[in-house]
Length: 593
Image (cartoon, rainbow, N blue to C red):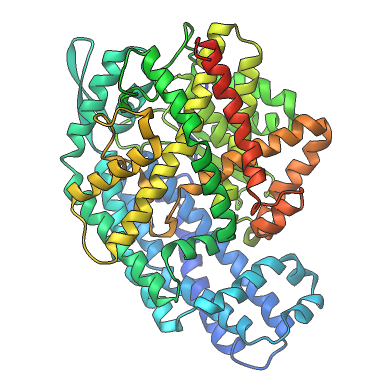
């Protein structure tokens, strides 16, 4: 059996090693030299080709150093929130953010002054390799403040939104919750309590839900203060930069048009009644008459509830991926063999799951809180999809490895679809109910719950613009959003008013509206899977090429390359039809036509 914890030695073997200290010194020295170089070269009349080539080469080296140092510090803190060395390293890196911002501002200003960037790039293969990076930065000039203002904002974030986000993350990571289990009270970390929502015993799910709600009361005021501070900062900076709203800024960062978002949201609203039908049927099967209580959202269904050890989960994932793509299966096997995953729930470890791609060492690291459920297995498959996305970018320049949020969920949800469909194809009707329901439950989270989070955050920004919001007001706003999104599918007396405390994305100033990208990713991946069913093996090189080009295109051009028009609701509607068919099958299997 492999270790349940990841190995970070290929980054560094510790914070006190010579490699770590020397790289930090190289980064700080390199930033100073880079800044001095820009003073001389980016304000003179030197060749634009040579200037941009030198700038990008220097930036690549700086990015590699900061990425390596930052990844080691961030990954360590993610599983050990009290690690003081990691905290100090993160603070030291954050203190360099001003210099990094200054370098970016100078590039944007320089590009703004170039009357014909196209002609300059034609003279250099190296610049052509970074064409999208250069054009995207030139376009940022429209919302650029002065260099002094941009640097000041960057530095102030360290004691503003970043500090508040870290504070709130520490609160939840170290929150011990008393839960009655096996006839006695047990103290469990938040991730472990959240995992009890998948427990087969209804009483355990219910007790965990009420215990979780009670525990949040101890951190709600601090969390509300942090959230107000972070969103207030986002609003202020967006206004200063001339954005109509934080959403407009997010769409620009997402390389996505407002028309595409409207298309997506319109289709979501159109199909909500189908999700409500599913939720009401699940409630009936579990003995509820007024809709599904929140604590039973993830209740396993069917006579057979599949469970996995960690090794079994990886074996199942690899085996089914191999039927699709030996390249994908090989990536997962390598990640497992080389201990790139940390799956053990434990005190001090953050909740949820994520993948961090590490182009600087051509690897990735995946964190989850694995409890053996079918849903947790699909979560592993999901996060390994993020890793496979990074694997397809491993030979790219580090400047071409950044892709926008909406496309970030493509490979992950594609992976989920593979394992779920594989499980359905080999199951009896009763097993199929369990697997199909788990898949629909996940889709409900990505469509319905994500929509509730979008509604909440939209309301949050609208109200925060005029006033500070109390914890009670935030809870009511969350309940209103859940009522609108879930409709009569949920019991309105048993919702989850604290989801704004639970979800860490709300506390990242750079991740405003980190909700609709999940819905986009689900429906985009479903559409791609339908293409795979149609094209067979001919689809595989197209799929890998698509993932490889995500760092060098906006969404409209990227998706058009595979014949998709995001601004036409027909595409999202065709993808949603696949989920509707699953809901109909579930209703049929459970005796509800």
